[in-house]
Image (cartoon, rainbow, N blue to C red; front, side, top):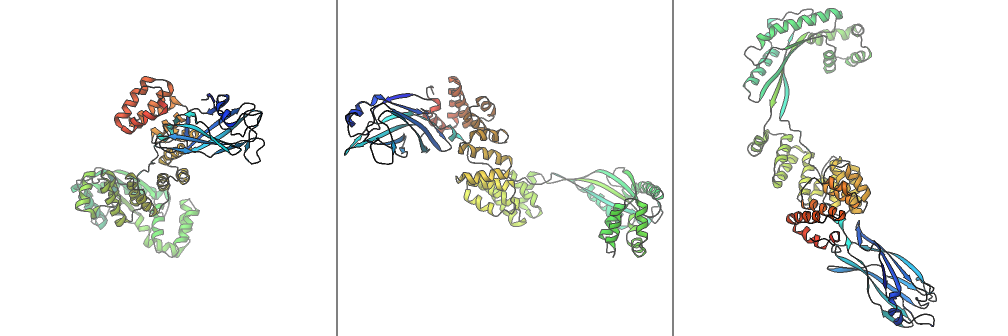
Length: 549
């Protein structure tokens, strides 16, 4: 916005000559000077207030022997701020200031101020002192810009860090298992096997499941195998016969339990089990055996190569192969874990039964920050929990205890994206925007992207902020603000989801820029009802200049 002001022959100090007026006469000729200030309404961007002032001196105005000192000053509620002094000299002055010709000249200056709170309602004035031949004349003060747009200061700049989730399972799964071993080349279930320890353990597990109110069987299986020795087709047939005999024995084994009829599967030669048992054994040449398995996939070749190692094969026949002549009896079990209410009670009454994940779950459901803090500290002491250490830092951030949060973060062992983002939040709250930006860019989490958008707004990088926030999850307020600052008002309106005071205020700003007086008032009324400070701000905000509030 530009406006030409005709003002005093300000800013010129003379010691008179026949061609130029005296200092006093120049003051009287002020209306012959033209001044343009761009913008006429100042704007704070990234903590800076920058304007351009163009002063046009007419011919025979600036005395060749004069020096002019001009001080730009922003006057605001509660104080004033002066920019660097501008000094000019006439053509005959032997100094190093900017020369202004007596033939007439336009002088342009970029003037900078640091934004401070209170400048929301302010104006810019120029104060001049003309000097020449021992005279010093204070010239009339001239206002050249009125008001300041400070909309970027509406940014939510506190930053956010998310808690790390627990891995507590409401429902866990497991298996109860026993097995029947067979003699070589046999599919007969021996009575000794049905009375053996493996079957007894399986029956005991089934009984425990039956009496456990938190457990239930979700499925049952029989899987039969043959040891990898002899012809493949014979072993396949033997494995199938074993699955059938095990299925017949199932009802006897599971009598009185809740186990339903099983699904039955025959695998054939158990090379997977063979490899597992060999790797767990103390057989001297087990590495050689495992190498053979990796080199050959054909079962016959594998068996032949292993048989060629006669001493090794003898060991296998005694230690490994008998364990592979089997049928597995399996019950798949689902366990209902402690509810949130039970966890809360156990934490107070019997915390020793809770593991790390349970501690983290209880802390996550607690509404009280003091309790969260206490639980996380216990988890740190009991389990050395790094997640609890990080979450403790988040509790402190949420409470505004930034020094404690920084201390807690320093003890976190992992340096993942969550931690780096939280470090950025601490830096942001310390006004270290450089470090905050570095952390948020490095982190890459959703929270970090939203936080980066806030930093970019504070730095005045509005276009990048709008792009970053368009893809970020989180604060709709800052996304809408970035769109406002880049004059994308339709996108700004669509970005607002919540009904907080600041979002209503942004809606009012959008309405003001679109010329919708009714929407301005309606949204400011809602913002003011929720936040008295915003109501006071609106009265000073140049965005609403000309609107009835």
